[in-house]
Image (cartoon, rainbow, N blue to C red; front, side, top):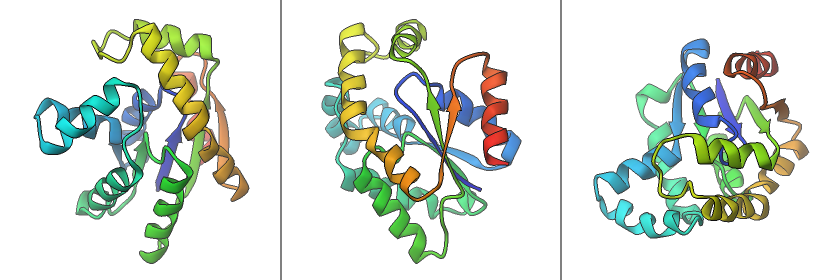
Length: 184
């Protein structure tokens, strides 16, 4: 299964993707984790994207698409994957669809977690991960960027008849069950 788990920062994509790995038997691929790892290890990519992420902005489509394409070509992703944090722009979604089409593959499901802004802000401020971009001011910038640059991805997949909207409020278990009901 090739699943895109979509939603604004703080919607629970990472939490749900990690839990779903076992349930559906495919690996999570988090572009955010990939970037944070590169930053932590001070790789050339990490140094480049740190300033961009610290400002609450998005890393360029070409860099992200290349990184994802390289990763999903690895044998451990042959059975499928859960994309968490990608695609973030319509251009990335189009590039993903094109890349998959050339491989004779497609996205099986696009699940959008819906959570009101006030809940997102509360979750991000309280999640305790120590991220430098989880301050109220930076969270508001990230949500603005999401609404302008990332939210249109939902319309793209709705237009293709692939989007499934899931209520992202409630217990982790209840949300997980809603996701499973939407994709299985």
